[in-house]
Image (cartoon, rainbow, N blue to C red; front, top):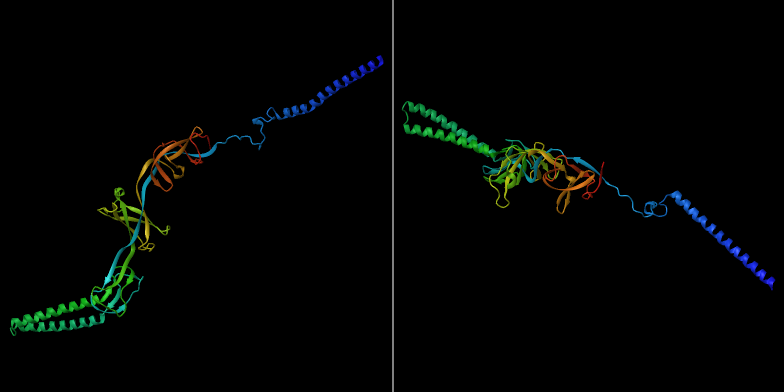
Amino acid sequence: MNALKILLSLGLATLLTTLVACQRGGGGAQSAPAAARGEAAAQNGPDAEGGPQGAAPGSGGPAAAQNTNVRVQVLEPQSIASESTYVGNLLPEDRIVVKSEIEGMVEALRFEESDSVKQGVTLANISTKEFQVRLEMAEADYRLARINFERDEQLSQRSLITQAQFDQSLARRDSARLAEQLADISLKKSIVRAPLKGAVKTKFVQLGEYVRKGDPIAEILDLSRIKVELNIPEREIIGLREGMQVDVESYAVKEIRLTGKITRIGLEADARNRSFPVEVTVNNSNNDLRPGMLARVTIRKASQDNQVVIPRNAIIERDNGRVVFLEDSGRAQQRLISTGISRSDRVQVVSGLAFGDRLIVEGHTKLTDGEPVNIR
């Protein structure tokens, strides 16, 4: 019995010793991974365990904000000219419808439509042969009347005829002379000539046609110079004067650009649209312009010096008006402006900007007021 108690006591002691040894060994095994993690943490730095600053690239953490790159322009005094553009109709410098002055048959036509003609050239003959014969008959009558008058004059000096007979001879001579002149005039009228240099627009008659006095023969246009008819509003007519040079550009063919001058300014405005008729004359020696075309006329007025002028693309349209951005101490400042004269890509600023301002001209379209910027 005593021997059994001794054996149980030894077994319990052995079991307790084993449990204690296991607990110590387990603690040592657990410390190995912890040491490994501690070593890795030491190598990666204090933020390697998932803090915000230790987020790896692409892990979804927020990126650092970058300033917008912009380009600036320092505003300096500039000059800008006021200009206005209008569209007008082109007309020939002169237009004449040649008409017959006598009745007769069209014996000859010496032109066709679109032909260029010189002043004085023959266009048509109307019964010219008949009037030539009439002139020759009148000349013969006048020669005879002159001979009879000279004979009667000698007889009158010798008192061989009465004064009444002499007066009748004198009247016949004068009448024959006038008949000859009328025949000569009729002959000249039968030869239709061009009254000006130009181009034939329309031919109204045909060969062999009988025409009456006043019937049209041809229409001739003087294209050496072209007129542009404009309607200028009453608020812009002030400052225009005759002789002022203007730029004329074909509305259809923009490569055609000529210089003209104002030749007429109407005295009275049209009651319907309150505009004044203005006529511009352009040298058209090369026939670049044709009547009936449309032309764009640009009128430039006096230039204004010492003005704030900015590029058009620097202006942003907002609900509250036109704004620009200025650069000040590395930040964008929004500025509301009022504009005046516009010419091509340049705009005059009448309020909101001053000389020396640093205007942002590139990179400004998405800026906000107060946003940091980088000047490049």
